Image (cartoon, rainbow, N blue to C red):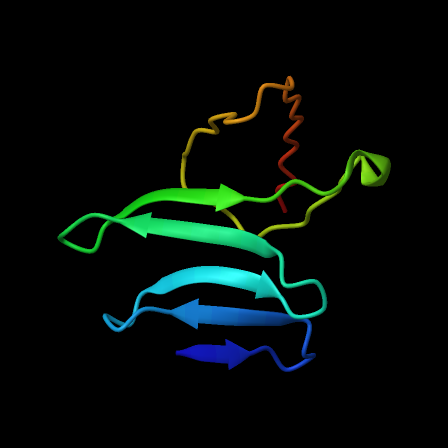
Length: 87
């Protein structure tokens, strides 16, 4: 099953089990996020497509997140800077 976002920019792809399998760019067809789950439905991995190098640096504003780690699956070095703003 697929669901189009309100702005029409992305498609959310769900498996028969109802889990979010991937997010696809509606214009290019490129997968921007992919998710893998174990047999109990726990999230095993999330794969995020990096923007083209010409678009770096990237600034993301996210909601508060639980502690997590990042794994670089590419051969190119990955440099991250995380700044937390607290009220």
